Amino acid sequence: MRRVSIFGATGSIGDSTLDLIRRDRDGYRVVALTGGGNIAKLARLAREFRPEIAVTAYPERLAELRAALEGSGVAAAAGSEALLEAADRPADWIMSAIIGAAGLPPGLRALRHGTTLALANKESLVCAGPLLLETARRHGATILPVDSEHSAVFQALAGEGLDSVERVIITASGGAFRDWPLERLAEATLAEASSHPNWDMGQRITIDSASMFNKALELIETKEFFGIAPEKIEAVVHPESIIHAMVAHSDGGILAHLGAPDMRHAIGYALHWPERRPLPVERLDFVKLGSLSFRPACETRYPALRLAREVMQAGGLHGAAFNGAKERALDHFIAGRIRFTEMADMVSRVLEDLAGSGALAGGVTLEEVRRVDQIARETADAALRLGTAAQ
Image 1 (cartoon, rainbow, N blue to C red):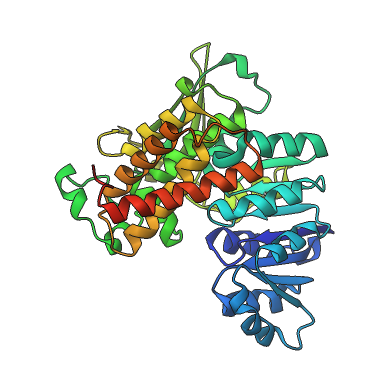
Image 2: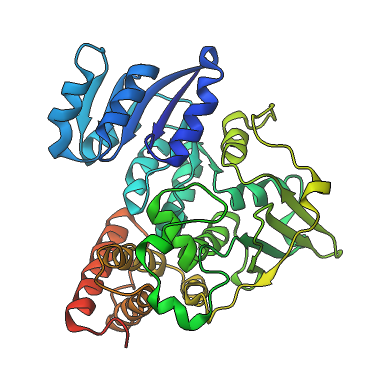
């Protein structure tokens, strides 16, 4: 019986992971479940799967979680230290699906125990790729990508050498506004940005898809995880979301990974790796599909992609600054303080300011990543107060 923990159990990735575990209850023992503010759901899952501990990220919600778990035999805890303690509990496989930079510390802690980390938290690699990979190497741990795009690249590269790779092509749905005229984007509402045409995801990820910040993070993640040179990584808009990524080789051949837009495919691959096992996902019918289409990922429409290229070229702590600024810009858009198109303006301004001040000159350590993340958020807030985000 494999021991598993799920960090981010109440989100969409957590839902899909637990769906797979639910189908093979005798094969897994759940050690820890963590979540955010949805205490009712976290408690309901804890009562169903009976982990040793359930953790909410919010200390002020601990009493509520304890009350919801009373009599269940499941311990309740809260806060960042509790998340680290949960990561210390022995587990064979850990799903890292906490959204944002908050997912980095528990992921690093889990790797120190030599476990297998299924990484859905792309921000960990964006902010601290060298640190994460070195920690895994030093402790004999394994990192498996769970983003559908990076799982696709991982599978397409199986048995292949990186020296033959000419290009890695990451596909993007194009998000909610892929068919909008450019002049309309500035007026996009929160509700419109929160509706994805193909995937069922949380609000923040869905908005990141509409702005293509999600894809920008994935470009950086590709460079960090696979060691692919930035100039060999590209994005293409593929509205059907059937091809998740392609790897082009020096002999002219291209290996593509295809599958229905269902995260259980990538999660199941990581859960069962190195084996392949049957999964409850839709099988493609190419006659019904008829055709697959592609469009250029225009950096005028999606300036986040241009920023990602700058970050990949710069390396170091630029990824942490990019992600911190992106998360704060998204906060401001959700709160109605800035327009949809001003998110990229704000991130660009933060990167320019921090690079110019020398704030990004340090090494990639957890302490430095935290420092830069905080400075990036503060700089984004200052830009908002000064009204300079759109300059």
